Image (cartoon, rainbow, N blue to C red; front, side):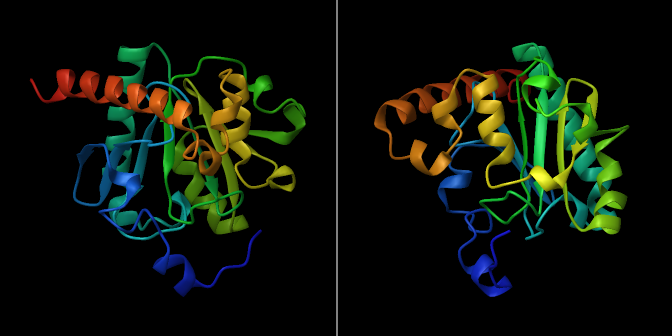
Length: 212
């Protein structure tokens, strides 16, 4: 893992700055969380859930905000299934992060877990709920988490690396050039398509929630 001081992380965190590019296309917010369009989407319907306060990952969330997160997570999950037909999610729990501020990534995907972890099921541990990450983090101080539909797993962290899930899901979604978000944002053609995807998400979210 890269070695950054806490001060360096906080000073350069795009998710702590409410005026940064990361929150350019907000969907909604609660007392402690933002839900926003990912500005470098892997595919249409790519949502980020991030805490307003700086925590490195879900495992660091205090118990006082867990229920609030769970409600928002379920809201986004149900929206994606209803609107785009499927849902997957992932988070790098202090391993493989390129932004060191917790952000749960959610988007439509209904493929096989084998496409994400071709190393085999020996590298996977099935979990019952995203809430299980709290005790996993307490025990191991890191994790790699992903879900497809209602199935959730953690992945052996020995194979973790920067952009671990982004790169793998990008390939599985047939959008490999979207894996590296830093390169993606310098590609005018990719970002034009990304803007179209974000506009699609915003319009569909607003039709469902702003008109009700």
